[in-house]
Image 1 (cartoon, rainbow, N blue to C red):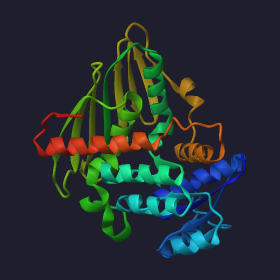
Image 2 (image 1 turned 90 degrees about the horizontal axis):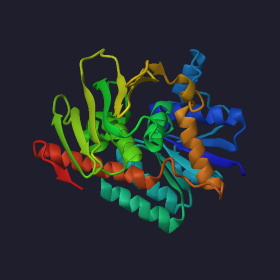
Image 3 (image 1 turned 180 degrees about the vertical axis):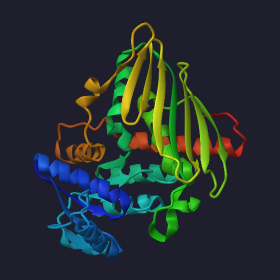
Image 4 (image 1 turned 90 degrees about the vertical axis):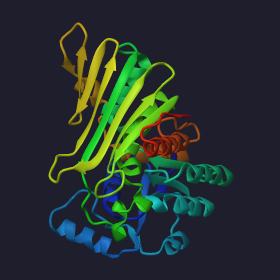
Length: 345
């Protein structure tokens, strides 16, 4: 495969994780190069330099990379195959479409957009322009979740009976562009920013459910807490909770508990514990080790292969799956607005 050239659009917090992924892949010798970074706030670049001076090493070294404050300027001057969008959520659709129409493949951060209609338009433009589109649903490349999918797909512990997913946080307080994060019209609040991870992983592993319901709590921001239920034709039930409603200083929680016919899997702190019905419990670390890689790096690798390897088929992170997850979020919000009414898909 020939070297695939990437550019980052947006250099806020999440972009540092992406930058670190590029560094790992380049160090490994994978045929990829991050050639340019664009952000309208030039201060993001000086902040990265200051962070390096203070000893930071995580995705902050921009030496040897061309820096821009104008996307049009970058597109005119750089030979780029893929643009990696790390902009605020409300900008994902417009910039993805602009870039695909400009002849670029696109990798965009989650959520795909803030409406299913937008997602459909993005898919249509991707097909019309013959450009690849991938979305940053990074849990598809997280070892604990790929292990769960493997257990479901291979019936390792019998049939999955129910799945509980949790993602709990205090209200985000970090600096962001024009305060967009806490503006429901620009971030979609907890459902689109936080809950999307677990709803998407349920969709990725189990497909679209038959019906859904949800309740929310409004506090400092609308829909600061959401509790959802997904019901499947095969009898599997998924219960998912996301919260920005925890008190300040409460540790972030990302976990799942999967009940199979013959075992329960518990994911917490990045590790999976397995509790078989009739045998001692054990840690799945040996099984996870082969897949314990940087999720951002693997997400980028998947995009690069989709673009550059004609024999590669992207099954791990399709834009159609990401769009379906947005549809589910919309249906869950519809249910919450109707006091938890069951919504059929």
